[in-house]
Image (cartoon, rainbow, N blue to C red; front, side):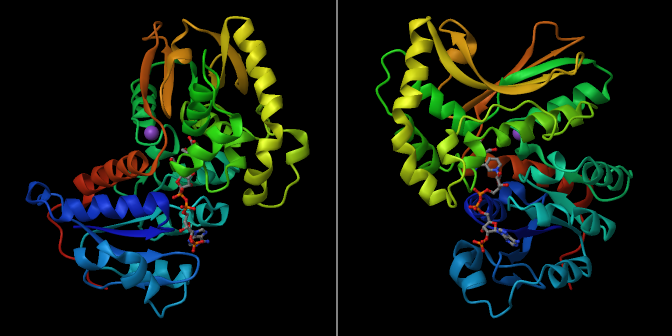
Length: 370
Ligand SMILES: NC(=O)C1=CN([C@@H]2O[C@H](COP(=O)(O)OP(=O)(O)OC[C@H]3O[C@@H](n4cnc5c(N)ncnc54)[C@H](OP(=O)(O)O)[C@@H]3O)[C@@H](O)[C@H]2O)C=CC1
Ligand SMILES: N[C@@H](CC=O)C(=O)O
Ligand code: NA
C-alpha cells in the first residue's frame, strides 16, 4: 500500500483527490493500492489511521477538512505520518509555499517520500536543492519526484533525467514553458486575433492555468523557476537570482498590493500590449514568451520574443507547452508538446509520480496503521 498525504489541497490537489478516488474504485488498479491518509491546508488537518473512504474523499472540503476540529499543525502531521506502519508514505505538497518546500529535508529524513508540483524547493536556494537531492539519492531511501514542476504532466523531467543519466550531453533546452503565457499569446498575438490582453489573462486565470497569484506568471518568475529546475537537473549551477528575466508587468502595476487589484487594473494597460503586438505583426511575427537553458555557454534566459509565422512556436494552441531538447544524441531536437497547465493535467503528473513510488515501494505491503 502507498499511503498519500496531501498538503494544500486546492485546485491541483483537489483534482488529484478526484483522480485518486477513481483509481481506488477501479479493479484494474488493485495491484497498485494507494490510500489517502492525510489532508492539511493552512487552517485545518485531517488524518485517518485506516485511510479515508472514497465517499469522504468525494466531499473532502466539508466532510474531512471543513468538519475537522484539528487545527493545522505541520509538525504533528509529519510526526503522525512517519509513525504509520504498513506500506510506504508519500507527502504531496500542492502549495506554492517556500516554507513548506523548506520542510522536505525533514520529511525525507523521516523516510517520507515527497511528490510535488511546487517549484520552490528546486528553484530557490541551491543549498536546499542539493540537500533534497542528497537525501533522495540513497538507493533504498525515500524518493523525490517533481515532474509537474515543469510542463505540468508532460514527461519533461523524466525525459531530461533519462538523457542525463544515460550520458547524453545537453546542449540547449528551449521552449514555451508557461501554460498561462502560452494561452495568453496564442490568443492575443495571432493574425486576426481580437481579444484584449487583460481579457486573455482573465480567461487563463479562470481556466486554472495561472499561479495562485497571476503576477508570478506575468513577471516571468514562473518560467525562470522552470528554466532553473531544468538547468539544475541538467547539472548546471543556475538560479533565478542571476538569470536574465524579462518582466512584462508594466512598471506602474508592479507595486500593487493584491492579485485582485492587479487583475482589476490590468485593462488600463491593454493599449501598451496592443502596441507591442501591432509592431510584431507588422514585421510578420507574433509574440511568444520563451525560456532558454544554455548547456554550453551559460547564456540561459527568459524573455518575450518575436517569432515568424511559420515557426513551430507561432502555431501553438491553447495552453500548450513546447520543449525542445538539443543534445549530442539529438542534434535535431527531441520535442515534447501538449497542455502545460490546468488542474487535471498537473494532477496527472503528480499521480504518475506516485505510481512510480507505489511500484517501487508500495505494492504487496500491509494496510496503513498509525
Ligand atoms: N495550476 C497549474 O496548472 C499548475 C500548478 N502547479 C503548481 O501547483 C501548486 C498548486 O497550485 P494551485 O492548486 O493552483 O494552488 P491553490 O492556491 O489552488 O492551492 C494551494 C493550497 O495550498 C494551501 N496552502 C498554502 N499555504 C499553506 C500552508 N502553509 N500549509 C498548508 N496549506 C497551505 C492553500 O490552503 P488555504 O486555502 O488554507 O490557504 C491552498 O489550498 C503550485 O505550486 C503551482 O505552481 C504546477 C503546474 C501546473
Ligand atoms: N502557472 C503555471 C502553472 C504550471 O506550472 C503556468 O501557467 O504554466
Ligand atoms: Na512535467
